[in-house]
Structures are given as structure tokens and as C-alpha cells.
Length: 290
Image 1 (cartoon, helix red, strand yellow):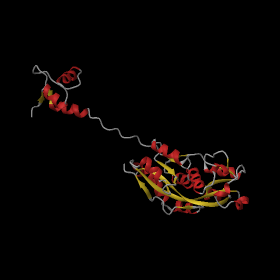
Image 2 (cartoon, helix red, strand yellow; image 1 turned 90 degrees about the vertical axis):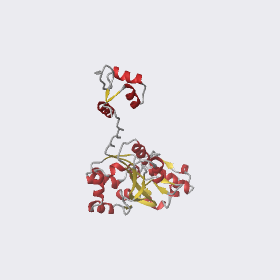
Image 3 (cartoon, rainbow, N blue to C red; image 1 turned 30 degrees about the vertical axis):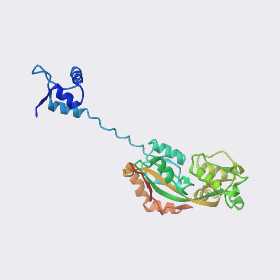
Image 4 (cartoon, rainbow, N blue to C red; image 1 turned 60 degrees about the vertical axis):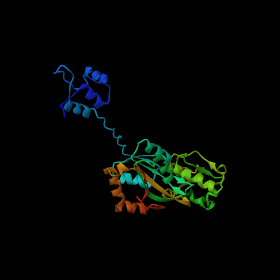
């Protein structure tokens, strides 16, 4: 094998016309020699020049260490108590999915009911992240129902009892509001029969409206009713899941949270919460193909 390439040979190697080789020489981009009175190109130098111009695919930037999505009281406590290093921005289930898609957090919490499949969360995740490196795991099952003041609890038996009452809704993207609207439709209850107040930005805010007497009821968690000493009429058991970036699952931050959740302190705290069942915690409900 010759140690030097001719102009024609280099053009064939680069799959360009000879005129392009002369342009590269004129601009000083390609290594060459004129020692023999004509252009020659040292093969070793050409190999090094080609290698130095290889473009590596850019790795996506690491996601920020933030938990987004729907608020869950047990999860919020675990993030603090574990000192795993995860910050949180809780707004709603659908907001969390949008932020997760935009890589604004390593995980998002959600409880989105799909009436077509009568299931939780998988349909919403599979539609958007079916070919992404993500995993959907169970966090907890939670009792949800009508939260009212204890002195009026006798007036409520089911969702039909909300007709004519001042009820605090949640914003449109909240899992609880999606579920409530679906249940009202299934049970043929006209939403217009309910006196909806201003939407609350969180479940706690909705409960406070009932505590302060500015509303008759809200559709919330048994745990919050118990915490605020309010009446509770159970309606449904829902599943709150966490969607996690698969790469981040194995990083120290997420592993630290998992380790804490397997410990006695977490288990003891969870057992004290009304309406919580963590028997299936971290069971996988969807694994993306990416």
C-alpha cells in the first residue's frame, strides 16, 4: 500500500470531484505535500484528518432532579424525609406529563383514569411515551370520595348527592377532575346540576374551602378528610403511579428514594394514612420500548 495518495485517489476516497480536493488544499484544510512537484497526500495524515472530523452524536442533557406531576401527600413526605435530593413541582397529572415530555423532571406522578379501558395511567403514558425509555410504576392506591363537613355528612350517599351543592372542582388537567367528570357521565349525573365554585390549584386548597365553609364539598382523598377532621363518603379506589426516565432509575438520587421507601420508617408512616394501600408499590405497569 502506497504511503501517499494522489489527487485522484483522495477524491475517490472522499467521494468528491478532484476540483473539490484542490479547493481543500487551497484552504489548508487537508494535509498534503508538494515535495515531488505535484500534490501528494500522506495516507497516515489523511486518516488522522478524517478521524478528527468525525461528529459524535450529542447526548441529551441530563434531566433536572425534579419530581413533577400530580401531588401526593405520601410522596411529598418521602421526598423530604429521605433527603434523596429530589425537588418537586406539583401541579396536575396532565401538566406533569407535558413537563416530563419536555425533560423538565426525572419523574412525574399521575392518576389519570381512562374510561374506555377502565384503567389507570397506562393509556395516557402509552400514547405519548410508547417508544421512549421510560417505566411506569405503582406508587399507591388511594381512597377517593366526597369530602364534607362532619355535621352535613348525612346528606351525602353518592355522587348524585352533589346536585345543588357548592362543590370545589380542580383545574382541567388534574387527575381528580378528569375522574370526577368521567364518573358523573357514567352515572348520568348532569354536571350543570352542581354549583361549581372556583377551581382550586391543589387538593389541599380544595379541602380548605370546605373547612372554611366557603363550599359544601369537594372530591378528594380520604387521607385529607381524616387530616382535617372532615366527613368522607367513599366513591372509588384510584391508583397513583410514577413515570420515571429509565436512565434516571439507576442513578443514586432515585435509588436513594427507593431504598428509603423499603425501610421501616416509610412503611410505618404509610400505614397511618387513611385510605392508602402500598402493597403494590413499584410494581411495573408499563415499560417503554425505547
